[in-house]
Amino acid sequence: MKREHKEEMKRRARNICLVVAYDGTDYHGFQRQTSPVVAVQNVLEDVLSRVFGDAVELAAAGRTDAGVHAAGQVVNFFTDGTIPVERVPRAVNSLLPPDIVVCRAFEADRNFSALHSAKEKTYRYRILTGDMPSPFICRYAWHIRQPLDLAAMEKAAEGLLGTHDFSSFRAAGGAPMSPVRTMQRAECSRDGRELSLVFTADGFLYHMVRNIVGTLADVGKGKLSPEDFAMILAAKDRQRASATAPACGLCLTRVEYDTAWYEPSKEF
Image (cartoon, rainbow, N blue to C red; front, top):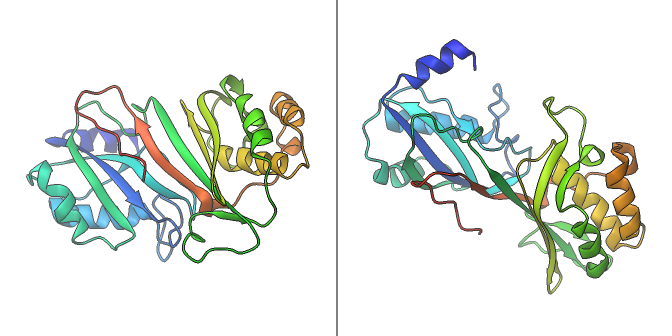
């Protein structure tokens, strides 16, 4: 969006913030696409424009890729529409397809931006192990037939904590930005056949979580040691890391802001 257009939008009366959940399987990511390709943003903006009575252009906390899901995506937009904020989720959800849901709505501060005001984000990645896939979570988890060494994966993941140059886990094609990020949480847990990998940081690079997960999976398979993983991180070389994990297992679960009026989504 051009600067002049942004200023025009910001002259509208209200800044609305929404927490949104969606199944990204059937969408070409979150970011708006040109027809006939459909992204989550296309659908949301169309419905919000109908509900609020003016053209809506969203800013989002994260541009999730094709096939990636969200339980706590955050967006904001400026509008002159007068619908009370407490009525927004029901009004919007009545027009949305069932795989996109507005969970909460807030009257935001004038200077709030879902993207630029974010302090930290949390992603969860799910892996299903064992011979048999599951039709009930196949859209939301990466199926790996062989068992994974959780202890080795946990040890490797500990090395992600703190401030690092994450170039080894950065895919080509993303927006130009510093590869240095601070990771506050990097946890691996198991519940039966399912592994859950959770990462919280002040920001993430293009495909960063999926590249980390693909490399941690190779640690779990015994192809790499935790020490190998540490050397891959230190190398700052994408060629040293493993293949990118599939999009289906990834979910943006939570975004944090320093505002009194905002409540993040509870993790699904």
